[in-house]
Image (cartoon, rainbow, N blue to C red; front, side, top):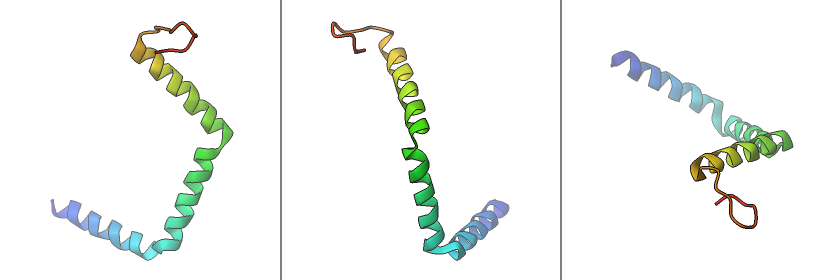
Length: 66
């Protein structure tokens, strides 16, 4: 338990030293990656597969999955 607490404190201190500027850099990088067309395409494929699995492959009259 003591090792865990020491690790948590060390992580907090190192994170606090990085500061708000580093946090903003990380947020901006994550946003750029999430907005990339390749990532969006992959997310669409995954979303369609999940919907297909959940709905058991059932389709509505207009061709969309339910």
